[in-house]
Image 1 (cartoon, rainbow, N blue to C red):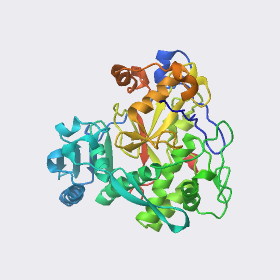
Image 2 (cartoon, helix red, strand yellow):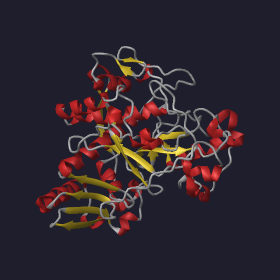
Image 3 (cartoon, rainbow, N blue to C red):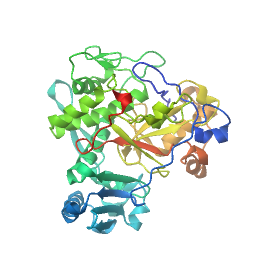
Image 4 (tube, rainbow, N blue to C red):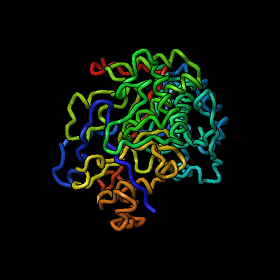
Length: 419
């Protein structure tokens, strides 16, 4: 049985940004929306993929030993990794070996030889209690980071194994908070917030940001939000809660909260403006604006997702994309081949194929399981392979991924647009 899809607009706390058709897709679909050229994917430091440290000669062997020890503690065998070390210039890289690279990121947990399992983590609930959730393992996150096609770069202050550990732990915390959400859907009406902590998506004066954001997860039934706002909240919660509750690092927590306040609205502009380069009203200022809390990778291969990634599935149909709310879908990857379900429409997650199916069927005007099921056009294995590509190749998945910055280990953006 097909589910009722949630309409996912780019809904901010103060305005709706209309999403035009991707410039990549425009050549296939006709002149819909602005013809904004996409930026080329940034090159890796030396063309390599995986986890890369550019750190100078003084870090060489000691950093290697620390990273090797972290991998060993996670149960990552040395034979699964191709390692390159140049002590002279402090270049150290880790990438999946050929047999592991062939697996991809979506089904790592299904490979018996890897011994990847889920992990149990505790999250706070109301009245000081806790609940246990089953979530992605740090081992799976690192194995996904090692896969070909993407580089996670550590340099400067981030030449420290703790920068890697924090990054992996934040990704896991983002996923953990996304596992069992049951927010309400606005259903065409205005968003609803707990007015004790929020005023129309802005934390009330005197309320700490981490307290206001945390309430959206503790008292979920008091919130009705679109999927763009929901995606931003889970990214922010994963970051703030990590420094507040898990690492207990008040200095980094204060750093992140101060960064969120830049530019006015704390939930605005946390992602880079270039993420929305396909929108019809994008400006040069938007394209130049960095994210307050999140970075971006372009040119990501099809099917490459790291748990904690924010990705975008674009509706490339020129007719139904014009229906407000069906321009595309913001999606957080949960590992284990799963994507978010903010409203518990589908037992708390969608598989990759289910997510592709949901967005693709909008062109067939499948907006309701009960009303529109006769309009569903079954997809073949070749169809799924095709639509998992970028719009330029006939698919619907943008080749970008958005992810947390290295807090405490890199200078956070201070662009004039964020003043």
